[in-house]
Structure formats: structure tokens, C-alpha cells
Length: 161
Ligand SMILES: Nc1nc(O)c(N)c(N[C@@H]2O[C@H](COP(=O)(O)O)[C@@H](O)[C@H]2O)n1
Image (cartoon, rainbow, N blue to C red):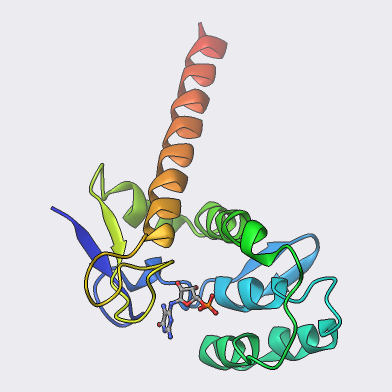
């Protein structure tokens, strides 16, 4: 059964980048993955002055609105870099917060889909034909965490023999 998620208050809302789960990356604390992701759009760009405002935005919706302003210049490599930026932040989120890590692991091998009606890159879009990159990242993070947990069990078993 495919698991669809989108808004924070809906089922599996903790999979949304807007969920209130902070992350620390390179010494800086970000209140949500969305804050971090939106700020990374401007690293090294002429509009990097906006980064502190995105960082301080009171809500992820406000961080997203600042990052989506079409008159600002994105970093030149953004289209290439954005998927890796997102994966790093999503992995950090689920490594940091044990409660939502359990929810992610408990989805087993189900397909995860961001059910955004408008986003055909990160989500599936209204026609369900989108690329679902956020869902794919979550499934790959789930697998990475599962493998590292398995490895730590095997290592502990070997150490106790
Ligand atoms: N508008 C909106 N509301 C939400 O609750 C969402 N989860 C999303 N999706 C997220 O928007 C981000 C993409 O932003 P850009 O279009 O690249 O600026 C990404 O985090 C999606 O997961 N959107």
C-alpha cells in the first residue's frame, strides 16, 4: 500500500519538510528541513543576504515564501545540487529524532509519496505523474538507516562473542 503524505497535520505529516523537527548542519541549527533547504538556494549567490532572514523565519511557510521569491538569484548550480542538499537534510532529520525515525522504519518497504497537488518534482502533483523526489529520498534514507542499524547489531554480536 502506497503511503501518501503532505501537510504536517495529516497522516505521516512528520515526513513533510515543514514538520517541526530541527536539524543541526555544519554548526548551524535550522528549525525545519524547509528552512535549511530554502536557504541553501542562495549560498554563494549575489542574493545570499537573504539567508539570515530565511534562517530566522518564524514558520517553514514563511521560509519557503522567502526562498521562492522569483526576483532573487539562485546559486548557479542549484538545479544540480538541490537533490543532494535535500537528502543531507532529510537524513539528518531522521538521525536526530528517534520518534519519527521509528515511524519511518515502521513503513517497511511501502512506497512513500509526497502528495503535493502542485509540485511535480518533489511530489507527485495533481495528476500523480510527478517525479516524487522527496518520497524517493525518504525511501533511500529509510534504507540507509536500516542498513546502519543492521551493521551495528552485527558489530555488537561479534564484539560479545
Ligand atoms: N507549499 C507547500 N506546502 C507544504 O506543506 C509542503 N510540504 C510543500 N512541499 C515542499 O516544498 C518544497 C519545495 O520548494 P521549492 O518549490 O523548491 O521552493 C519541498 O520541501 C517540498 O517538499 N509545499
